[in-house]
Structures are given as structure tokens and as C-alpha cells.
Length: 462
Ligand code: NAI
Image 1 (cartoon, rainbow, N blue to C red):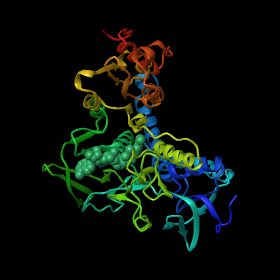
Image 2: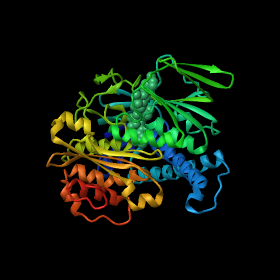
Image 3: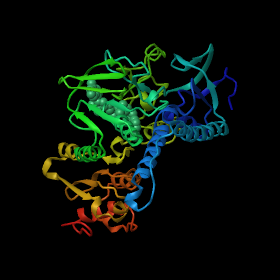
Image 4: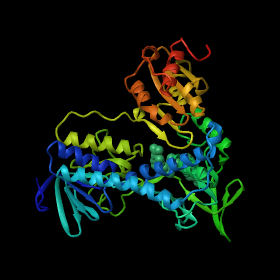
């Protein structure tokens, strides 16, 4: 193992988030000498400022809702309030446990772990605090940070990003969420559960606008029922401070006031001043460009994760990192089908999907070649028990495979596993209908939707 930094590593990785550390673990497993350079904490955005802590907040929100709703199930509960310190303690406990585990894993795979801020100094080296780490191959995995809009200054107090929202020392009385994408609706959901008066401002005509329109509409209906307010189809124009908060104006002249503004208008790549351009790496608006094997135009340099213009999801980062490790180890690799990546938004109710939307399918195959079927959770016993509503929508190429599964309902994120097998194995509705789904589960709703699509609905109308 190359512990001596003067030696040449097989792979030097810049950035220890989901993409970088997955590449390090897999490459080490395949016998490569790996150096992993991280300026902060291994695990990156997902573990420390993203997926994991936000889902802990959302789960705390779910418990709050259950305490409020006990009577609906004949259980005497009262919601007394949120102890935000207690919520943070729980959330931080989850993160630190996973962080310890990950550090142990990296040590056990004998990856050379370097703490410090690295900079690409040539197509085959990264400098960290005056020390050069040379590799036969370099992997760039420096991730992303929250974006803002031109002229919209983040002050960390009244105008904040998800980084600040995650460590906020109080439950805000009211909040405006700018951006009805994934981060926007997840925070809106958690805060509403905690008792905040929330308004979402989204420029496009729908919440979660990249989802199938049916999912957006179902989420909007559910949010309206929960008392989460939203303004769609009008762009943000400015924010000013008031005596006790912020006043947000939209281009259509509407204004909203609240204690704070959460800016959730996307995340942008971290690539400035890191030597990428100087090394000749082709870039576009800060993203590093790669081919379908995550290779940049410089033969010794690859890039993965939020730094490249693919889906910004931790599991995509893992897959891209593994792909690079396996390619460098000489294994046969297959490009990622990004439509086949499962997507889950963990708001209440959850939105989950895999494959393509009905609109995209019609574009690709022609409107008369596409069949769509909606199965309501009203016919699903377990969803009734949980008192959740929603739908599973299937998109099929006529007489062919299922090319899209779009689900809205509490806990349906957990059903995306079977949905991704259906999409990725190009299953026919009749093949899925043949499989027996356990009763009573929410999973059964997927089976029943396919029974209906195959022309033999059980608990659904013809
Ligand atoms: P996003 O791209 O999902 O949503 C940003 C939203 O802001 C868009 O809907 C956009 O139309 C809107 N917007 C932009 N400019 C606006 C303006 N001037 N006025 C009003 N609205 C405006 O980005 P988001 O939510 O910040 O998330 C960043 C990334 O993190 C996403 O790519 C997402 O995939 C990832 N993520 C994934 C999660 C998950 O898988 N559960 C959870 C959180 C984040």
C-alpha cells in the first residue's frame, strides 16, 4: 500500500462525498492504491448537510404529526411542541453514527486519507498544503453548494440556504421557501409539521416540476390540505428586510412576509479556483464535462457526482464513482441509464418515480403509442390503515414495456425498489401482474396497478 505521499498512487481522488468515497472504497477493493483528499468531513453533503440530516428532520416532523393525529386512530396523544435541541441531538446522533462507520470503513480498506484543501496541479497530481499527491489517474469529485439568484444575498440569518436551515436553533413562526423543487418541498413539509406557517414560491407552473405532472398535482392537493401555501408560475423579484423578518416580492407584483426566506433554487458545482481549467479540463457553466464513462477530455482525469451535469443525487454519485473505479481496474463497465435511477422526494406525502413521464414518453414514442394508468391508493388496504392517499401512475408503451412509474403517498418512497426493477428489466404489465404481492402492503398497490394495466384489475374499476 502506498502510504508514502511521494509515491505514485493508482488513483488520487479530490473530494470525499458520495461520489469520491464510493470510488475510493471500490477502487481499494479492486486492489488499487488510492489517496482520498477531503477538506472537511468524509461523507460530504449527503451525510452532513443533505440526505441524512434532512430525512431525520422529516422523520421528527412525522412523529409530530402523529402526536397531533392520535385521536384519529383512537389513541390519546397531544402535541406539546418541538424541542429543537432534542431534534438536533437526534439528527446529529444519526449523522455521527454513520460518519464513524464510514471513517472505519475507509481505514479498513487501506485508503490513504488526506485532510486538507486540494488543488489540481497537473493532469496527474493534486497539491494539498504544499504536499504533492501524484496519481496515474485523478478523479474530481468536489460536489456542489447551494446556489442563489443574482442580487439575492444570503445572510445566514433571515435569508438562508438549506445549510443554515439544517442547524437553525428554533422553529420559525413563518417561512417563505423560494423554489418548489426537492429541497423546497422537503423543508416546507418538515417545517409545517413542526408548526411553521409556510409559503412556497415557485417560478414554474408546478411544485416538483421535473416530476410527471400528475405527481405535481397530487402533491399540490396534499399540501393545500395540510395548509402549506404556494405561489406558482411567478418569478421572484426581490427581498427586503422588515422589522421582524423579510418581505419577498414577485415579478407579478405579489408580496409575502415571513420571519425568514429559505433559498432553494438549485445547487451549483464547486469547481472555481481548483486548477481544473488550467489542467485543460473542459467545463460548462462550472460543471465538468464527461462522457458516458465519466471520463473528461483529459485522458488521466475523470469526474463524478454533483460536479458533473447529471442527476444531483447521492446514489448517482455512488454509481458514478463505482463505475470509474471499475473502469480503472480494467473491469467491463456499462454506462448509466439515468432514466432508470429511482428518485424520491421525502415530503409528506412522498413523491417517488423511476423512468420517464407520460409527456416525455409521448414525445419519444408518439401520443397514440403511450398508455397511462392511474391506480388510487383508496383501493389499497394498507394505505387506508395508514390514512394516506395518493396514486400510482404507470406509463407504458402500447403493447410493450412499462417505461415510467410515478407514485405519490406516504411511505411510497420505499416502493421505488420494485418500480426500478420493473423499469430497468423492461417488464411487461402482464409479467408484473403474474407476481404475487403480499397483502396487506402498500407494495400490493404496485401489483394491482399492473393487474389493471394488464387488463385484469382486481380492486380497481375496469
Ligand atoms: P431544484 O432544481 O430541484 O429546484 C429548484 C426550484 O427553484 C426549481 O423548481 C426552479 O424552477 C425554482 N426557481 C429557480 N429560480 C426561481 C425564481 N427566480 N423564482 C422562483 N422559483 C425559482 O433544486 P433544489 O431543490 O435546490 O435541490 C438541489 C438538488 O439537490 C436537486 O438536484 C435535487 O435532486 C437534490 N436533492 C435531492 C433530494 C432527494 O433526492 N430527496 C433532496 C434534496 C436535494
